[in-house]
Length: 227
Image (cartoon, rainbow, N blue to C red):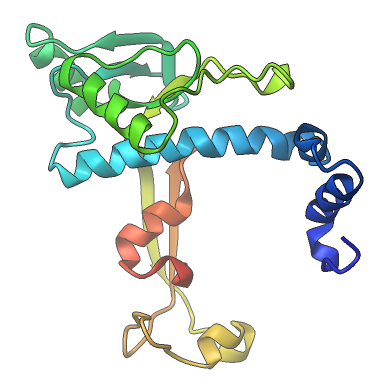
C-alpha cells in the first residue's frame, strides 16, 4: 500500500485493509467514499443499458421509434423520462404511441436493472434476458444485504436524448500555445483532423443526464480520445 502513487489514495486504503484483514472484502470496499460505492452499482446498470442499446443499433432497430414489446414513458417539462408513466407497446397502441414519440411527448426506454423494474415484453424481454446472461448477471438480485443502501430496485431511461437551440458560431482563431500539447504537437496515428482546422463554438441545450460529449461526437466524427 505504501508503494501506491498518491493519486491512488482510495485504492491504497483498500489494499491496506486487506493486508491486515485478508478475507474482509466488504470492509475493504467500505474504504471507498459512499458516492463511489454507489457509482459501482450505477456502472453495472449502465453496462447492461449500453449493451442493450448497442445491440439494438446493430440490429438496425430505431432507438426513437417504438416496436412491439418496447416500454415507453412520458417526457416531462424538464425533458426527463417519467418512470411512473411507463407502458408496454402493443400492435394496437403502436400508431398512437409512435406519433407521440415523433412529437417528443413519449420516448422508448431501456432497462437499468434492479430487483423490481418494469421489463419489456415479447422479443424485447428475451433480448434483455440474453444480454444480462451474457454479462454474467443472470443470478444477480440487486439486493446488497451487507450494504443495504446500495440495493436498487432499478429503473428505465430513455434510449435517445433531445437537443434544442443549437447555435454554431465561427470564432477567432486561438493561438496554439493556449490550447496545450495535443494541438501544438499536431495529428497522431489514428486521429482525425481537418487539414485547415476550424475554430467553432457550439451552443445547445440538453436534458439532464445527457452528455454534451456524446452530441459533439456526432458532429466531429472522431475517436473518443479527441473529445
